[in-house]
Amino acid sequence: ELKRNVKNAWWKAVVQSRDDMVGLDASILMHPKTWEASGHTANFADQLVDCKNPKCSARLRADKIEDGKCPSCKGTSFTEARAFNLMLRTQLGAMEDSSSVCYLRPETAQGIFVNFTNVIDSTHRKLPFGIAQIGKSFRNEITPGNFTFRTREFEQMEIEYFTLPEKAEECYRGWIAARHQWYLDLGIRKENLKLREHGKDELAHYAAGCTDIEYLFPFGWSELEGIANRTDYDLKQHAQFSGKKLIYKDPVTNKEFYPYVIEPSGGCDRGT
Image 1 (tube, one colour):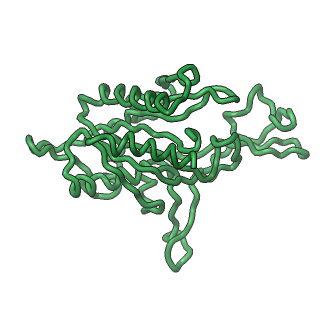
Image 2: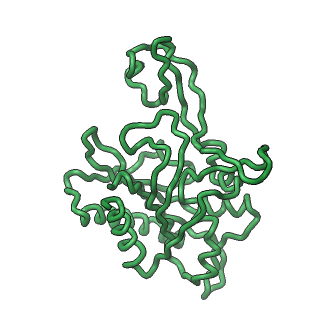
């Protein structure tokens, strides 16, 4: 019931209380090329190592080993790091071969991007406007744990907000403030929340900015939600891989262009 209340509060705040938002419920199973376009097929992986102590053999994320010691046995000898793709594979159709491989979605965002023109054509929205959805995502976590932070099945609350390129920075800052205020309005103490802007070395190659809303959990500060300026990367990628026109046409000037995207993305479970 608590989780349902969190989701309802989010939906009311970002969809029902605004006139520039629409809601969507996209598919969990999508065409495999979706994940090629998004970069998940090639790049969505953890670097994992195995502890060489035969009495331990723990499998660990390479970036989470502190002081070069295994957290289980304190050993210091590990295998070479190997990449493990985090997408969960399944098969569709009568034949179980390479042509039938598809994936459970690792995030809900891509379902919004591939439906961009469907929303435009059916709602006739003008920029700026956003598409929001709440839905399950799945990841092949090799070492699940850490409470709700590394789970194989989880629920996301995501917005893709489309805006003019020249208005993107202003829009990005506006969403950071709005999302931070939402957590305060729920009753979370101000001193237990902070905003952490990503450094240049943390940003994805296509991102113009990203800020996390962090909460002081019992085990330390960790992310509740991230707000990113994704530029026009996603629509361009899906247009290229699908051969479909995912472009916005201004109804007044008839100018065609790819809008910039601001993405506030939070976890239902973490918020709960």
